[in-house]
Length: 172
Image (cartoon, rainbow, N blue to C red):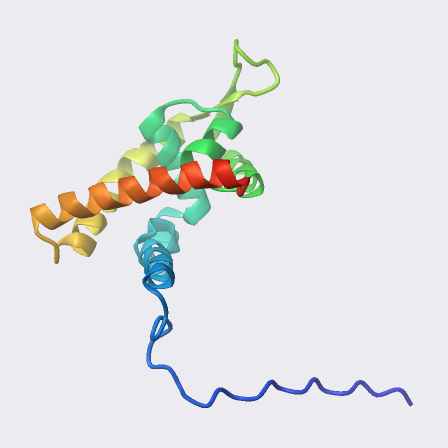
């Protein structure tokens, strides 16, 4: 009889950390905290929001993106939202099946249709937007207006730099 051997666990670390970023560099701490805060603030990551509005994180990113920027091609959404092509494609397919978006002809690129909201999609976007703004305010009300401005400036600077580094280092 051929029995599979159970995998052996790696040795436990000698000291238990209190926090994932304890004893890490500032760079690693920033990367972790930015990711953590983004995940915590993400509208579609809330089970209550998903239940209430029927959209997950990636679907809201696409619907919110076209709501803010207007009709976009899938490629433009990839660039604008900084999500991978497969994630955007799945969101477009799911939103299309839900009747929330449609594809419009693109005069500039016939093989790349523009993604836009249906009337039902626009109504849902208009319903979500005030709640999205309310939750964003709740999450940031611990910050003063000056701190909010400062944080926006720092995040914009970091985002621009990361985009430049990704292009320069071929990390796209």
